[in-house]
Image (cartoon, rainbow, N blue to C red):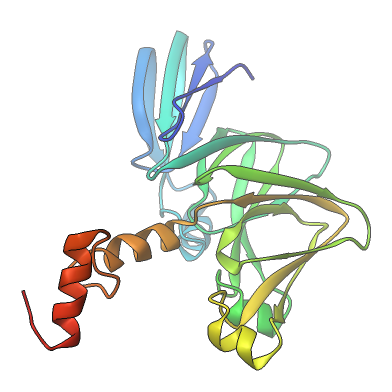
Length: 246
């Protein structure tokens, strides 16, 4: 499939379509469409398929864009970050964080996958359910900040902050691990657990999870705990120490 990504911080993917070609996307992801394009909302896979997508963090309905002749559609990510193409063929399946799906060709199936270990589901940051992308075709996913990619060999292990995982192939084993050490757990700032990814297979990480960005923004507001950087923020922090509310 021909496509090109525009933008740097807030990226969008632009996809040319020939007559009869179809793209499915998460509702609300559309940036624009040009030429003869028919838009239709479908509950792919029936009610059960729609409910599974809702559990995985997506919508009950998917929006389908079908071209009548030469056309073009574009989709944008909902927060600052990058857009990445995944080519699925020959039974390759990817597991993704919830809400990472942006759009895909018609042959892609979007479902759910349950984490196989209780600890991974309880402390892994993504809960017990991951998004499963299978079938044959092209998928576009998005993540916060920049992408860092690894191709793990059999037995190779990568320890990652639980919120920084975007996607990994189904052949990769996913689990969580206690950081170890009282001081590390209490003062390390990385939480009590790290995710572990064990090869073989590819994985994609994001440098700025949306939860981390939202937490930092909240910390810079009056309702947050971080105050405002600079002299003004320092003065306000001192006022908060002595019980002053501004």
